[in-house]
Image (cartoon, rainbow, N blue to C red; front, side, top):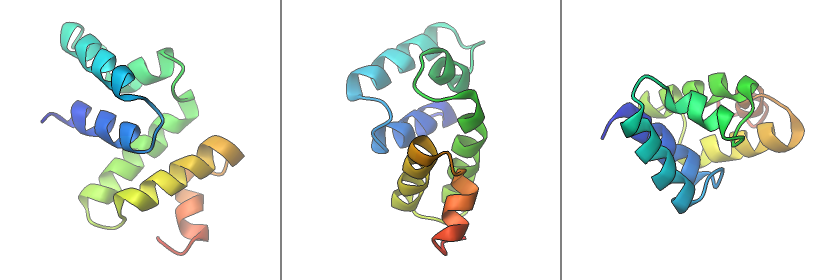
Length: 96
């Protein structure tokens, strides 16, 4: 599985996109490899431009074993609903 699909799986797990959206984004990413999944998520209105860094940070922290996927989802929820960054949310909750 490519890193783009890993990111889409994380975004799906956090319920930012639906299964149908994930399938559509995977098709778009495959047919237009020059366009990043992050750009597709922003252009599709799924996430704000400012959230792209948080998605990458969260993915990296999960890969390093520093946070769990569920903690990533809580942090992204916080960012989407309150504007508190993923990094700050994870620190405030004592997870980082």
